[in-house]
Length: 325
Picture 1 (cartoon, rainbow, N blue to C red):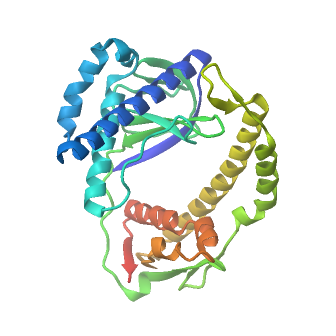
Picture 2 (cartoon, rainbow, N blue to C red; picture 1 turned 180 degrees about the horizontal axis):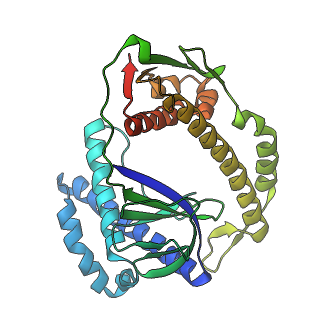
Picture 3 (tube, rainbow, N blue to C red; picture 1 turned 90 degrees about the vertical axis):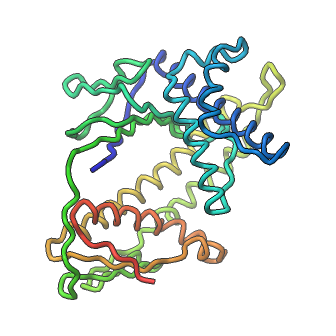
């Protein structure tokens, strides 16, 4: 069974520089081959495969203009190509969500390290390829083999490491479905969730409660001026960057509150020994979000994330997860 553990990390100045190089190189490789695949298709309706992109990557490293790609982990660049190829496959299957170019102004920057990562639990240090001894806050331990590590930088400037671990545990065998051990859950906006055994979980409305503060910070941010850099591009002034971080921290707090509440609710629903099956209605969320009167409230309660959490926690505990049309 694979499980992910997310930890806060505190890199040094030199480690932050290496992170920035990885973010930039991964973004460049992704955008470079995305542009090339689009041009190839527009020219003669042909598609470039993952193996063709992988074969061209060493050529880019030898090129004088892009030799700085050698400074980062080569496997991180290969994962970027895999992500691009997967994005195209998903687009051709679902016919929606065409791959977009990555921007350095994105709220989230990340890169993957597929192998050669280790953790020192005694010294609280994380080591990945090219970067050693990163200070990490290990608020909980784990047992198993590390499959890969994802380094992430949030919009507020915080760094996190998401570690995927093979716990070598087998999913519990699911039991037979019976009415006595089955509950149904109705989700909504007024009450977040109502179960058939009488439990009612209220909608905490974290976004609505923070709207006044968020509006105030966004108005202040809009009044801050931009300045021009050496190349004549508009960039944030120091005061505008400070206000941007304040807005990002406010959004981050709302997101953390929502995730914490979802974890609490899903834990209560799946930790009951008397429950062996959980039924949830299969909502068409993308269709519901087209209703402009309900879109904000539906996004605030995060029903999609709730169902995702409930499904994998049911798998951990051997509970039948049933979607009702």
